Image 1: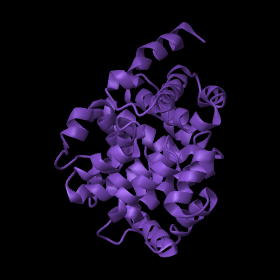
Image 2 (image 1 turned 90 degrees about the horizontal axis):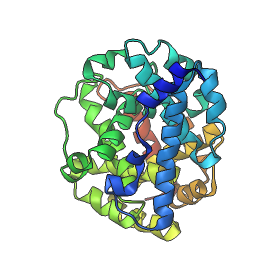
Image 3 (image 1 turned 180 degrees about the vertical axis):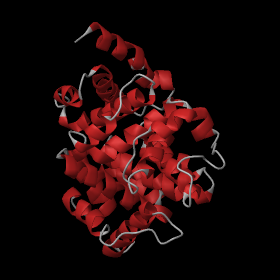
Image 4 (image 1 turned 90 degrees about the vertical axis):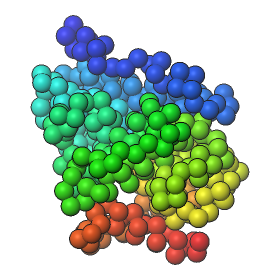
Length: 323
């Protein structure tokens, strides 16, 4: 590794202490839960560091593939952030994110788009135009990632203060009104971390928000509970019961997580447990439901295709489980 690339990694990579539960003042349910969430955070930062120091995308891939299966997706998410941050800097390089998405990031494309959202949160707004998010369907995950970042690092404001920015400026256009909904999906994911994987606490935190925001947040939390894990069957069932009014959304989020894990070949036991509780099926079948909902997918002129997709998935799962 050149001195320049080592220095670039050191300058660009946040301190690992930023992922510690005590530093973040997140709820600690158990020592096991603390270790899980801190390992998720350190894996993300490792991936970020690999991208920050890499001469090429291929160089980063070699390092990313050393991360254990359970945490590999988080490392790829971090790498996407790293490449996006580099692109957002005047001398950071161009075309890195596209090469990542076309290459090693493709199996992890959902996590990669979320990682780009983390970069959005760290870059000045006048640099947002430099962000690479070519897929018009998946670009909403950029805002999901942005929302997660804000809730994770500005917890008092976004979670306990329930802050929501009016007229969020990105991506703008016909469906610009949907931005805050996508951000809420990310805030919901982050609450699984803020609440320390304590399913009852997370559900109660979400239920304190105004009712119109809860469905997206329960969806995000269901995704995190499935993808990251940290809860046993009893806890997952408690979350399901406390979120009973939003079961289609919880199931939809869980199916998204299952799809991401299956696509990347990263399914581990807790993914199967959560999709059984929330979706009543295996991760593989849940992914099939999400894929089937893509057939003939377009926006309806009023709602972005991303939300049309989410609604289709929620309706399909609700019909199969009759909830």
